[in-house]
Amino acid sequence: MLWHSLVLLIGCAPPSYSVAQIYPLFAPYIELLHLDGGWAFFAPDPSTGRLVRYSVQGADGLTHTYRLTENLQRSDPAYLRMTTLSAAINADSPQVVHSVAQRLCRMHAAQNPQSVRFTIARQIRITPDEFEAGHRPLDADFLHLEDLPSVVCKP
Image 1: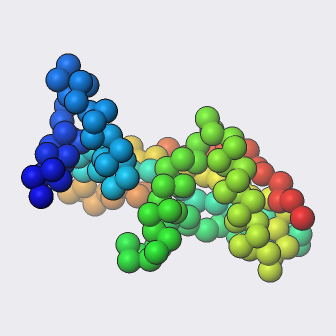
Image 2: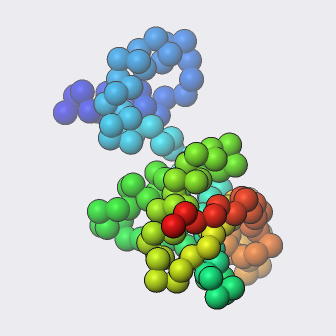
């Protein structure tokens, strides 16, 4: 119990010379349990969110849009895997994008998919005054959208 408590403190400690010296001793345990996520979700300055959605274009020309992780329940066995994959999908990781897209092509085989395109929605910070005025963090005006290139589905 003492070990785990110490790991929780080291994992979220701000950068310093001391932390840099001892962090490598705890890194495997911290990474194994995903305790390296940071604490930016706490007030007064929580981090903005990031959502990944994808569109599947079928052979019939119709495009269907899906949410990659938004509808998953935390109790779902795939939750951690899918949220980790979702965090890795970005323009700087074309291999990950291609791999996940091919998996989604197989998952949506009934639609005879031709391609998959990811859209990354990054939240723009919303002020308390904007929130009180009725705006919400997922409103279109508070999202910056980035479309990644389409990935062709392989047969």
